Length: 107
Image 1 (cartoon, rainbow, N blue to C red):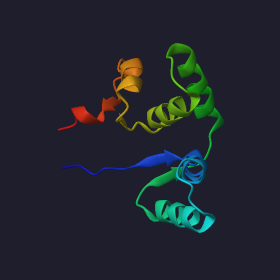
Image 2: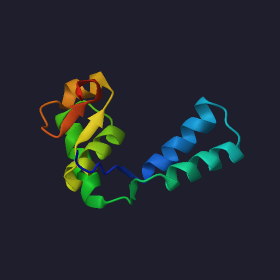
Image 3: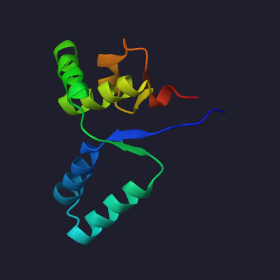
Image 4: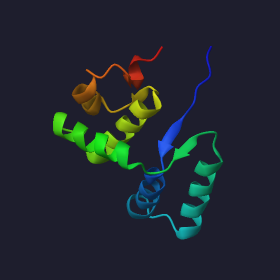
């Protein structure tokens, strides 16, 4: 079996903080602990890129997806990684892109 490399854009840290605070009601100590745990995981946290941002904006013109989802997909494309999603609705919009994989289709 080959090596698996995971990467996320750094904006995932802000999104995680937002969800933990507003949706789950976590206090600051718990939020900071979760962020620290994420940063200790064996994944690459990739800084914002204007080039990837432009590619994401173009994707939103081609597919009815959020800029957030488009940025993840554009980053995967830039890195030449597979884009794996559990979101069937998102997958339906972007399944024409060869690197996109629906999680339930993985074997």
